[in-house]
View 1 (tube, helix red, strand yellow):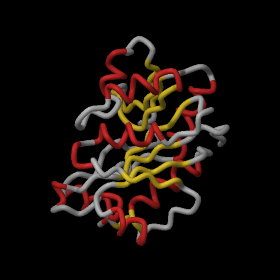
View 2 (cartoon, rainbow, N blue to C red):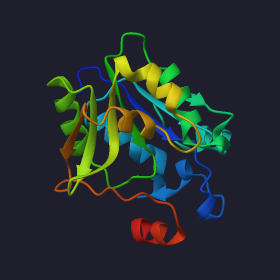
View 3 (cartoon, rainbow, N blue to C red):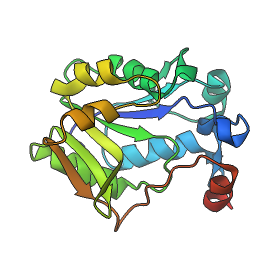
View 4 (cartoon, helix red, strand yellow):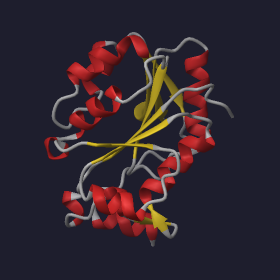
Length: 197
């Protein structure tokens, strides 16, 4: 698997409001912080460089998570929603990036194989690519460079890239990943029990 230099952007700023204020990046998963798992997934798929946007408890995240050569970006406006984190992450990408794989920290069921499918679709010419599960759009998504500015403008509140993907539905390529990944995010105490035991 190779991302051929496609950066990954891991959005990991959430404060876990529905989890009693436990920052999502620090949730335990297989004995380590959830952020480490997400970074491992995109690295295993061949993405590079890797950028992670931190927000809630960012000092603790920096201290607790082994992030290696990952570029860590602080988003002081993280409470305003995912949109501000997407904007901060896009601004931190290398100037020559042809696209970016956007990964949410709270989707532990996304696998390197799923990420690799999106990267392959990008190499085949896809400028807007999203994983699909049973034909329904999910995460992660891959955004081509020509859409970066529009993605940043549309990233408001908790919307992230939703406005961009809706506006360019005709350009969006869905890549079925339901056979190799699980799209569920980790939002509630019940989710946490299900994923971490």
